[in-house]
Length: 557
Image (cartoon, rainbow, N blue to C red; front, side, top):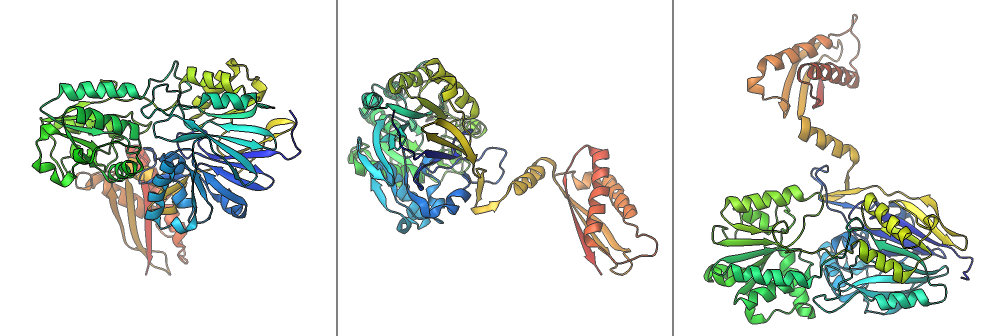
């Protein structure tokens, strides 16, 4: 194909090597367009962390070159970072009506709506954004109105699949437009570069249709007449909520929502016409005590075992709205996101302790994935026929498997690039190659942005695993002699009342090692702290084989 001399660069700030933080930047002629700006939820190795964001350092340094951000769909791992990035930059946001509606809620809460313009995109629309002629192609996912994005660039067509699956019977009838992708592949030059969702690249076969869950739900509702039914799913999974509502209404039940995000999303999508629930079948949660439990279905948040979610509070017996018991059936219509398994299992166990029956994906087909499996990914490859391929959205093992699938479908091995967060790739007349890196570490959010470093996380991990020892001493500033102490206070190392002999031995070890040198001298508090850490650290390791955090406090008199 014929291309101009102007290369196209793609900088990956997140989403390559983990599930979440999806953020890529397309660059041509010195102008930048973001594709998604997501967040990641913390793992068990991140104690106290609320959210994890991409490192925005490179974007801040190039703020004047940013033309806008395209949201491929309305999931937090693709748009949740906008309410943080817009605190420092200002740019328009492009997306479907639903994606923008969900983003608006977050931006309003953060007081940032004035820093952006929300521009609604329609299926099949083409729009010039900076130097790129962008086309938005419908794809099916677990949230309505997802897009694949075709960038017409100086180097030919670059197609990004977004999160997708090939569902021929979706709930809303909106299928992945493979015909349009095939038409792009037949244009002059075809699809030069494909970037595609790798989440389920390891899974053989095809994903089940979302509509298959509806049949299972209807059977469960029919089988549990006479009991209250509580369902839990992602608040953004509008198709799942629709099928829950359909099953409940078919069995003569009223519907109520529980959990802030569920209430807001159901209200928004009903207003937009994306969710069809008759007004006379909805009831406010406050009226729940006045209704026959056997005639109610509660649609709740908490499918991921989040500590303060509605379902977690029910499992702990702390919900202000209902007490779960033997007359309740809880249907968890979701899979646990990797890292959330412990929290989900804890919630299930708590519900069983209260006498409820729990139905989850391990015992019934109440969930299907929204991401394409291996055979669907092969289908995309066979239709798109890209010259080059970069797998995106997934852990490195997912990216690796997806790269192998592309090679099986005829993409030359030299034309498959396995990129990671921070990589910068360049597409030019010479081909596709790596040309640099940018900062791409995790930005941890704990209350406010940027107040938690890797060092703080290490300290938290030590505290949670090994405990802390506080050593307080008072010394003479002139002679360096010990005036009082050492006093030893411990949390999480040993139980002090039962370990007094050990603590007294530790005090004596520190007291001995702090004896001043002959001739005295001025006190160096930092040197004393180091001696305390070394002395007590060695003693603790010898006697308990543990490594708690040791915090010396030196007071001069």
